[in-house]
Image (cartoon, rainbow, N blue to C red; front, side, top):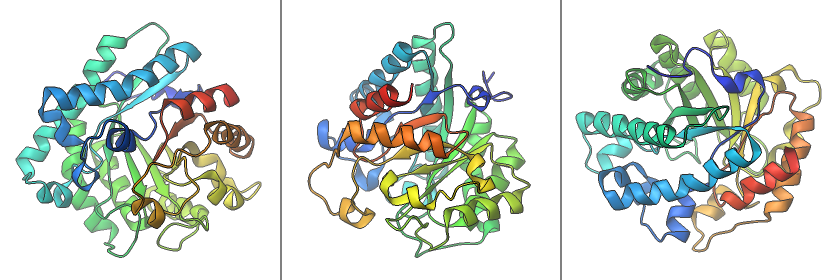
Length: 312
């Protein structure tokens, strides 16, 4: 039985960590090729699972050291129909690899379980598109139908929740929330932002959160900001706006570069971990419920440790 599905511990306000940019760590530090950014094929070999395990271990150690919780993400950001087809996975193979991904993080939880160290199993959903542009959109109903198979696999597993990462337009968020609601799966929605603080669709963050909540009866348990640097979205955090209370998590990039610049970069931009940590501390003063702290592109355990030092 899922351990926390009926009562997510991060909703109590206790600090929780996530991992940093595992994909960039694998690509630039482990020299592992990730076609189309997909990590789920690594689950098919002992070497791949070993590489994923090495990425998680520093974050488990940080959670122990600071006595906080940790959200264990499945490596399934690209494990949906369109991206899976590019890598030779049909619907049955995708269902199997999504199940295996939950099994992988469940094994980590069993291995590292300790009293007062909550480890939440999170089934990760990625966008149908690339996660950085909003050129190809779809209706909320189409998005619900598209993402429902992956959500239903997580529903029938040990996953405690699902989260949708790097969403670029609001209809996809609404559709995912509709499918998660049908499956009775707790959900976090994470929008990605451009250097102007807007979604790639051009919509403001506050408007996207309010529209998603209005269309779904505020079904998402919380929202997150991901795959952008705080420098880009700090001005969008208008004081006293009610939607700020719906943001519980931030997973920022290490670099201040745009998505286009990062996508074309041949070297890893690790930014300044200490500066990032201080920016998270500032964000905690702007976002009243911010307690899920992690990283995205270019971040690793050094950045998460700096965030812990500054915030905890």
